Image (tube, rainbow, N blue to C red):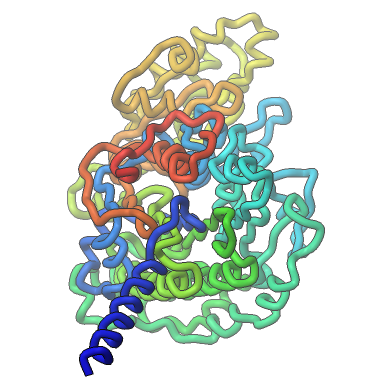
Length: 542
């Protein structure tokens, strides 16, 4: 009997030991997954904490390395700039993605930040969906990963928005997928392959967007539970086309009014659709299944779109985060089952924060408003005409960057620096403008702190304007619906590392979002991205 008991104990201990061995983290991770939630404010984690499940945001916060003081350190917090900063470890002044659209002086036109005339769209009939990372001027950590084993690692990036898929994939990515607004299908471009993989076609053929857009979107919880939000019927929401501003939302009707599948990504089901496609990508591409570490970027963009229509204090955005929490829980459980959390580094962050609309701020006597940039441009043209007796010295102004007509200035033998200074001094007289700085100053001086340092980090000589405008807190340009400033409500974002060898720790140390790429390089023991200026987060290596 004693022998049997000893044998049973031995077998039990062996089983426990063997089970523990399976969960031992390898020397290097097998899979790195970045999860972006566009427009996610840091405080959302606490505001909606009681609504979250144990396995979603709470698991990341409680079991991961939570950096509570992470932020972007540049002036114009555009979404495209954020993705490029995350993967290159550099600011826009180095990687060159200074705006979602850049102004081309030679052709006198705007161009989308990832537009590439040399590629063609795949999976879409929209001829203009020609996207690639060609305009990204620096290497990414995933580029260096692929170079380290000469393309044995796989790199895939997924987002409903094209720039949020293309830029994280880097130059050497295997694939970037984004939504075709006309069909709701996942599409790509010929930069990555000559035709879509068969598994993508199979996924598209299931017509999930039609299923999601046949739903009624009602609150996940009883509406009285949303006591941290404004009333459902308030005057600060633009809502959907057709005047839809209160629950429940009949998505069939809303889709009919919108006449495009892009409306899916203005509902929480756009996040679910993205999550399901990411799961399919892991399975079909066998990510994390061999000795070469792979990288997957998943960008959830619906919440920011919902914010634009309903505000940061709406029941709609609260419900979107409650539902996203369940999607993330399912995604984490799947990764644990398929790859193993111990084999995976998961990073949760955001492209930028969000802020209240000027209309709401004004209603509660808070400072804020619209900088009337188009009116300012007209007055500036008149001001310059009175001094220099000629027209059209300003070529383009988007409320942030002002571009001068340098060819005309040179032909007329005017002093470029003098004109820049006069405009800069004139601009600060407008309501909402805190300061402005010339390209001459940004190129010749070394700012060490404050908004001028952020302006310098945003400035790229070949792509930025002659004048950088710094608005007062709470102000946005009237012509820029996607404006993002250098103030903390935009720059401060959540940053959590989870899985692999990551310990459950909270850190209040200042962290720049340029620090992530070099830290991942240390995890993988490979070269830094070539323009990286960030530091390694040493706490993660202990």
